[in-house]
Length: 111
Image 1: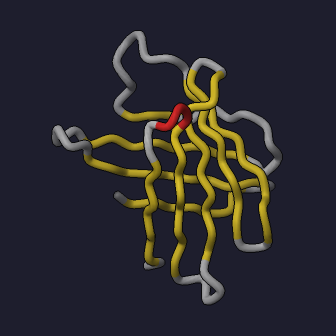
Image 2: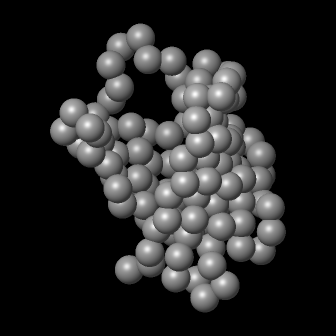
Image 3: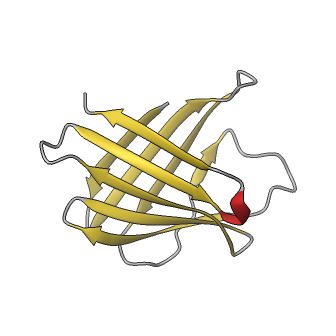
């Protein structure tokens, strides 16, 4: 998985490129502000028909961390906290799925 977060005007641009377990490569891109409002990501290739609409919102937690909430059909599917290390070289993302589906922690090194 490759995660890119950059400044975009008054907000941020985030891109995630990943290959699924089945070998399908996909990319999720979103431009957002850290303001608690819902933003719709662009997924390439497009998800199969019948997939519920997805949105993400972002809130500042501290100078080095933010919380994001992913919703499907308007219902919370997961929450994540992303925190950058003091030296700015590592970002840790901790995600909790709604309904007790499990927790995931990912660590990204800055390149």
